Image (tube, rainbow, N blue to C red; front, side, top):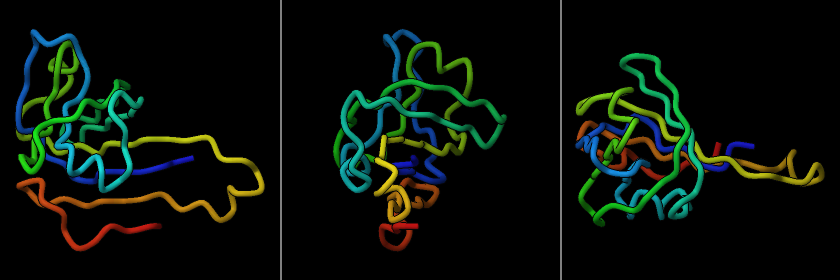
Length: 117
């Protein structure tokens, strides 16, 4: 099931020489209960690329969304991305499960509050 989503995040940096992963402002990760090194799916709205990687925390309050390693070939600074995290939920809890969704503005600041959809 979808656990959480950061919607319309804007890529702020790109580092091809880094080992890999997506760097995310740790405040944003906390808001949607995303953990360091958690597996994520990233969808780039500018080019349609989708890639799996893991989340690493970036500096709190910085708004950083950083492509690292091989992902730098799949997106660019300025691209809008959606970041998904998933979880396993038992059948009896699946009906009531609601993911956390955080929508961001062009500076990666939350728009409105955290939503459970």
